[in-house]
Image (tube, rainbow, N blue to C red; front, side, top):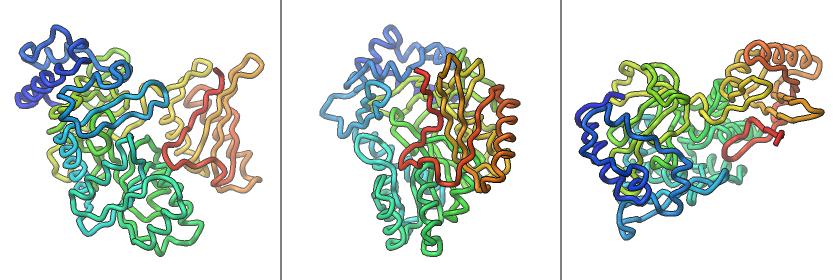
Length: 410
């Protein structure tokens, strides 16, 4: 993303706000807004990592007096101490405006009925989808996750036109709707999908079974939540709301910026956030900047659909396994559906990898398909796996995010 004079001025203002927090007073000790006179000066600032934010628990990130905080949100904390993010009234309003822009980019209108399945509570998802829909003037249906039968019943009765969900739950809903023969009664036109990376086969299944146009929506708890970027009708990357944030794409190993169009890790600096401003925050999400103008004419730059995370790689026998690479591999094998799971075990002194994948083929056709998958995995990833073909629906479905790789060695 280009650093203009106005962006540099916003970054300096953000730095001044950030240094009002106990965390950044220490993290950026000796650095002042007046020191940032150029892009090179900015690039000299240290990154902020999620572990840094965990160390600021509970309210070390707060950069305003406590009486100005109207809400807190938090990461799940499933892998360690949760990250607490405080919000001022302006932060909440800015987030709703960004989300409204997301809906408008997807062609959602006030007459639409927005079926919201992401979770509510400390997590940022559900309430963000709801606030944006209400600001737009659309009818928000704040169901949250779970109770799939009731979800489908209300989807039919209330004639929901827009679905907001993780890709995993959108697939589960699509399968249940198809199984019950309810597709003719479903009025969905669009689906805003976020929270997890998803492959082309899953994308095609959801679009076909629900009869919707899909939009990738992006965000993370540390940076407001979902709604800081979304794809448009042209499906050529996600527009990022750069009046609220500045982003970089870096080499995750060296920390240096990559060339335009080259894949790397997304780093974000907030430009307007009051409660918990962030400087050069490493998201660990892997993407690339898409050069040029979008055919839709929007002035906001684009990043590519996320391909994974720099920290979700698992090494087995010297081979590196990324879920995105497995997605790509399986997408090229006819007969393999979108759902798979990898089990890694350590047996008799050796690492063993079992790849379960779904298929519509009968038992008689599966051995040949398994051999094709095994050969392809060996050729493209450099690892011999034991492939196990199973029937559609045999692998577990999730109402939130799906776990693809299970490492049972430790």
